[in-house]
Length: 290
Image 1 (tube, rainbow, N blue to C red):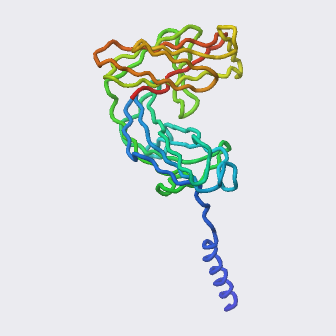
Image 2 (image 1 turned 120 degrees about the vertical axis):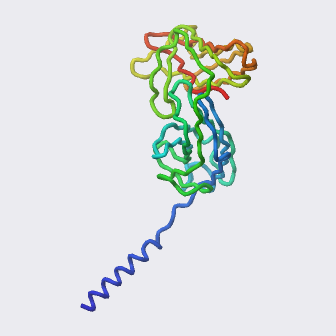
Image 3 (image 1 turned 120 degrees about the horizontal axis):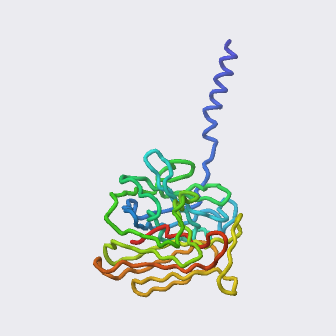
């Protein structure tokens, strides 16, 4: 009886010491974010300033460091559900001890339904294309799987303007594929116009266009000219701004609005780069101005 009791006590002692032998995974970077509280009206954008200081691995791909780091920013509701994502690639080469600072954009798209007024959480993390996440320092303890609380987002009631009207060349609104692109509109074979009304004053309109590669099932892109370059031109009647975009992928375009609130509304008219049996570039403004 005594021997059995001693055996159990010895086993319990070993189990009680086992957690002390475990090692925590070292953090790969320190991250700072400013400001920690942001107001995000509809349909507008806001910026947060991120500063990363890599602390592991002298270069991407070294043991214990991310080879292709990606940053995720998630807007969460009170239950922790992801409502919007603002994910983006780490903007520079991963180098130990070399701080990297930049602004990340948060947006309520004019195409998507507005978020309900209230307070939301913003979380941040570092991951790789395969899904692996990396531990970070500089913020509060994780609120999920290596997901850290970065700040709070205050969404006020929807203000009076601005408002957007699409010409007939734009196809009907459709749902996006994820929480990053919540909604989108494709442009048909004709040039399209986007009319902006109820502009409260001088500022900037921010558009996100995407030229598809044309290699998906049922897709066919045929350039109007003899070349093979897929391109488009965005023109504005508010100050005669003209911007060219080319090549597959996302393209962000900022158009300054200089007129006062009482000035005539502006319009942006992208010219389609291709024609074919299926819809062609480029959807759509996924965000609007400051």
